[in-house]
Amino acid sequence: MINLLKHTYLLNIKEIKNNIELFWSRYQDILNNKKSSWDDLNEARAILYFLGYLYPEKIVLDSLAGRIKYIKPFIDLDTFLLAIDTNNKEILKKYENNQKFSTLKEFYLIIKSIKNRVKNKTYLDEGRFDKLYSKLKPQDYF
Amino acid sequence: MKNIIDGKIMVIKNKKDYYRIKDETILIVKNTTPDITIIINKIKAIVTEIDNKLCHAAIIAREFNIPLLMGINNVTEKFKTGDRVIIDFDNKNIEKIK
Image 1 (cartoon, each protein chain N blue to C red):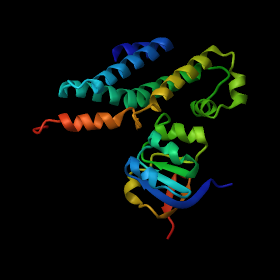
Image 2 (cartoon, one colour):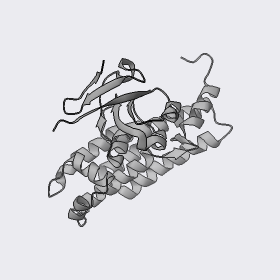
Image 3 (cartoon, helix red, strand yellow):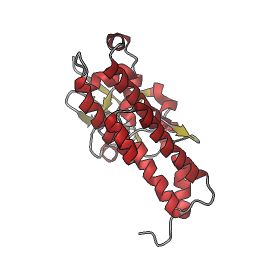
Image 4 (cartoon, chains in turn purple, red):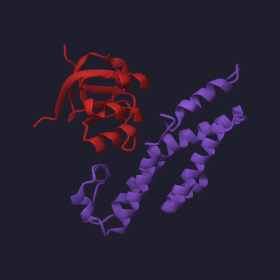
């Protein structure tokens, strides 16, 4: 997670993507492995919480909000997000040669790809995770 | 012009509730999940408890141009499925129509 945070600070898109996929891969390995333990499953839980909530909704949002002000001409975060999500050609054309805009756009699209990821018919494969979690949860859980 | 919508609501408590939606409806939910896409064309508006520009509901509302009211505390407890409500987006207010 430190590595992902480091590359988020650096806005190193390639490494951000790689690190997210590494987390996803580890999460899938835990869910796929029939020998996964309660300890492993709590690692999966940490990944799920980090990728599904903490990273996108706190860290990335702060990162986008902090960086959007460096884009010239000025664009606020709401307009930026709406322009990308609705494929607003007028705004996208205005910034098509703007490197900072393009980098933030790419960053946001990577985050969207994890926020909208569905596997085995559930969001972030939560269905499988929930089943395993219930199965392995200790009786004396506290 | 006032930014107001009214209609019947569906309170989403779990993913299966999405599959019960038959008619145009206002969704009342803590946050949405990708299951929402199966009934996306029936959604008149979304009201959420969560308030975050990158939450799933915010993304989906932008993508599908659905009116969205976020950050309404305990909204899934205050209303029940079938209630008729009026939403004032400018004043971030939702009220039951009696």
